[in-house]
Length: 282
Image 1 (cartoon, rainbow, N blue to C red):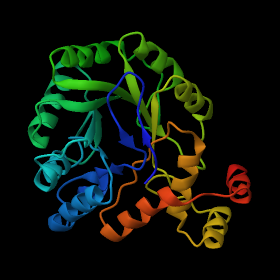
Image 2 (image 1 turned 120 degrees about the horizontal axis):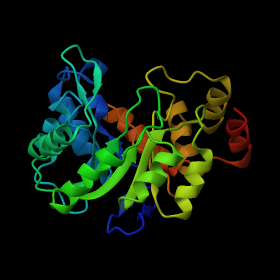
Image 3 (image 1 turned 90 degrees about the vertical axis):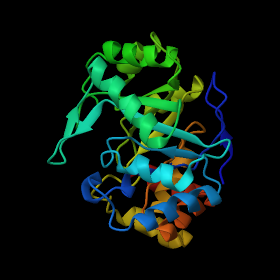
């Protein structure tokens, strides 16, 4: 397991290999899984393998993923950090809809607390608007609501998701931001400079879609490196992220215990100079 990372101004001690719970819901992150017992088994295996950082949201399902987490892991062991996000909701047709009014954000925090069986959430990420990536809009009003929920004792730490550098700067004027969660991987490196800036300030960076998204990256370079190292392409993609910067935490998701074990093994995979050069040139 990778070394522990402690974001600045927190008491969090996070293993850099986490687990993203999105895939525990049904197809398109909507409805129940085909095999709920298997989902429970994945979560319990994650803890057994040393993962102490679970990323989730009550709009996965909706509600279902958090309910499965509670079924599998409650009462939660000491040292387990649960991170959720708010700012969107699901339509009856499985659409993703912005939900950033004060009432919607409050309702979302309470729904997360209820379904996870918590009195306070370790970290809540405000997921900013924009389905295709950060849209540059102001997050001040929404973040203000989250700060008030923090002052009320319902939220311990605050993070941001789907944001650009300007939105992060705006957010840091209003709150202590402990992490940023954005899309970033071998083929999508818009945040290169941002990662380094956040590292210098002790803020965790949590990339999602480590292998390119719902349509996985197809690359002969990646496949060749994986074959040479006798690893899977996902393991190489995760190892590259872990070697990218010390503040990077990864949260690969899976509904399979076998794939979970492969992902965790990536934390012990070191990419040599030749592999890094090939991957960086992609």
